[in-house]
Amino acid sequence: MENSIIETIAHLNSFTENFPVMGWRIGITIAVIAVQVFIIWLVLFLFNKLSNKIKSGADNRIKPLTVKKAKILSVKQIEAVLLFLLRIIRILIILIQLFITVPIIFSFHPATEDLSITIFSYILTPLRSIFNSFLDYIPNLITIIIFLLVTKYVLKALKFFAKQIANENIVIPGFYADWAWTSFNILRVLLYAFTVAIIYPYLPGADSSIFQGVSVFVGIIISIGSSSAIGNLIAGLVITYMRPFKVGDWIRIKDTSGHVIEKNPFVVRLRNIKNENITMPNITILNSDVVNYNTFGEHEGLIVHLDVTMGYDVPWRKVYDILVSAAVKTPHIEENPKPFVRQKSLDDFCAVYEINAYTKEINMLPLVSSLLYQHIQDEFSAAGISLFVPHLQNNSVSIKGG
Image (cartoon, rainbow, N blue to C red; front, top):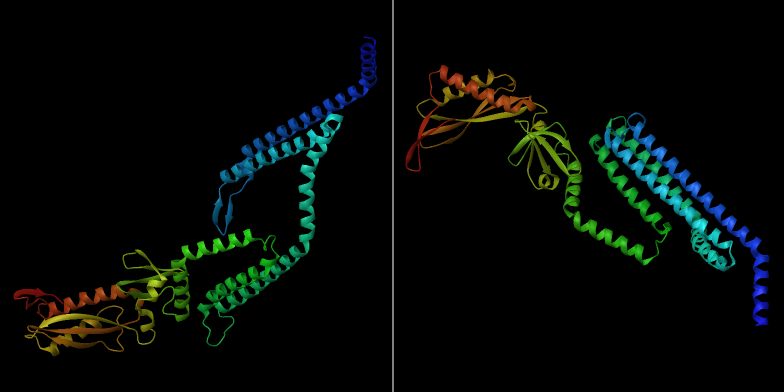
């Protein structure tokens, strides 16, 4: 009984002696918690104020994100991105405060002091590892930056020469001006590929099997999904160096005729006489016959040719004179060389004549053909000759117009 009383008194004396230390620790803990609560409140207050400022002044202070007059992000979208980033930063700051505050509080008490050291190690060990890895990676990073800078200035030099060649300020024998930008794009892709191949070993984790596996997987996906695109790209390069046409030419591909309004690495766009835009893949053009009317009309002009059917009761010499007279009177038809007539066939009941006339108005070819038809009708009507010719076809009588 006496021993238990003595032990109780000893515990009371020990508690009384340690009471000031415990009070000091509890006071420090409360103070740290109060300071952190105040900081969190201050962070929330400042971020809310900043968010309200962004919302109220977005229309006046924030401009749309544009690249070469193409709007990438509107003001509302930029505002949403900024608010999202503010929320992320606010959450990160609060989490960092908690990660720091909890170990500090635990370190004030002997029972949790070891736990605070463990928590600090969870935070500091990864950070120390990241910092050391970054220091070790600095030489590789400098090497990558040097390669990127060299690539950048080499591309600037190539772009300068391409621009000069395209504007014909620099003339290289055998190298056409319209090849300049295509050649520049090819060299740019090759230079990018060469740069990536050089800096690849210097990338962090380049030797890891995961990094290599992801690279192979991405390459397979691109090769499978872009086979048609690659075919059109290669066809576009071949077409560029073949030079069958250029932007502004009037061409015919299969049964489609029109002005070339755009050429790009994948497709060619035509605009026909009905003002319809027609898109044709480069690989289709490469496998088709292309007729360029502009190249035919570089000297004497392009020959406009129309068929006219006439019965044998009208002498062929008179038909020749009428067709030539109609062609000479047609606007945009050249007087020299003179229009001429070619007799194509002798059918059972009629002959087929072809009027040929030169024109240099290649871009007005459909209009010239239409005007020539009109003058042919006028000339035959003035001569009292009908263009309707009866002929036998499939055991029945039908009428064929020229």
